[in-house]
Image (tube, rainbow, N blue to C red; front, side, top):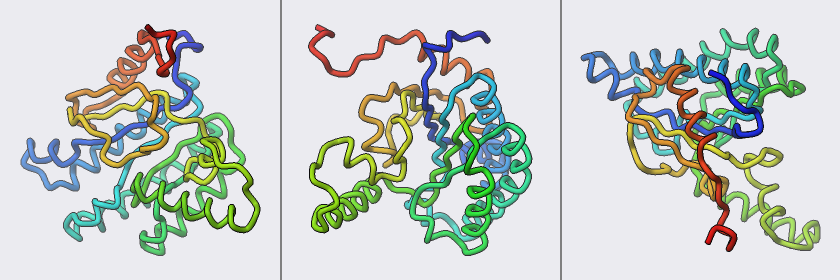
Length: 238
């Protein structure tokens, strides 16, 4: 599929929903849905890099997800380790910078160590920034940003508080806000994901479950984005 580069988003964010439902429809354990979903992650990353979109952020594990069965959670961390180990050579070859955001201190020590290693090895890459949200909460992100900002205001390091200043204290500091949010499985909510950053994002919801959301479906979402007339609340709209 051909795209006009100037019409494409700079930053795509995806809520990868439907792995459990996909597995349940096939009478499989929930973890099988997550395994199948990894291939959709690969296709999204590959397509984003080839199309030339510089930022991709994936919502992989929320704060609320810790309430899931312990066996499923352990399996998810194991899958993440396998994914990073397998995909690191590809990230190095294709100049992909890897980042993880969220309350990473919640994660198992071994997982944190691997995340740190991959982030360090890919830190200088500039073709694509791939960000994974883990143990993430949009509300908690805003609260921690407020706490840090207040400390710096009290210390005299910040003289003026505005949107630009506040954004520097978010996990996504230095990145543009998402232009496009994709949510799979048909759910019509943000689920506490990048609440500040989504202020003017275009939202694309599809009934397709994440394990079935492959390159063709991703490109259709991008094509829909290019057809939209973006508006940012100015009087020029009316």
